[in-house]
View: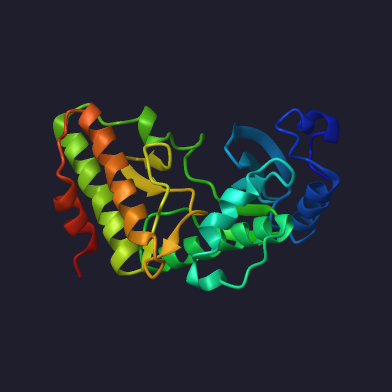
Length: 239
């Protein structure tokens, strides 16, 4: 069982329904985690928690809400992914596939050398990830932008490098990139939230990439760096 009572955890977005609790039990039986520890945040579609293993190592547990997540939006993304063309528009099938998709995207990104959390397990609507941080979770870029111009330029170049590896080596486009989905861990960017990530073969991938680039340009402009969309696009996509 999770370390907290079912009633205690229900306040966090009603994520701990009976089905999800049974899924967490399976992860505990498999020694992936030893129990849920603390809530981290409530996201648009999923709730994030920390967990520990029996050896005391920290993990991140991402639980997609079965009843309140926008599975129609998920379907709109998945239906054009070449890997899932035959998926049916059924709520739980879409949610479970969404979790598998994020897991597979992260494995592929890791294999290409992109700085992302290591995916450790996925069952049904639950994904277990490597904990990025030391004593506490690494902060989002929105809360931890370097103060000096040199530091900002270094961070911007490092993010561009990660996106280039993601595109040219993994063949993926993040499709949901912003300062909210980049962690600053010891001065280096770590990309997170890969559920919307799609292969470059997706008919919409170029539009997604340009949207990601637009989000980066907007964010860095607020911090005094002016970037050109076409130049950034070329840096990311050139072989």
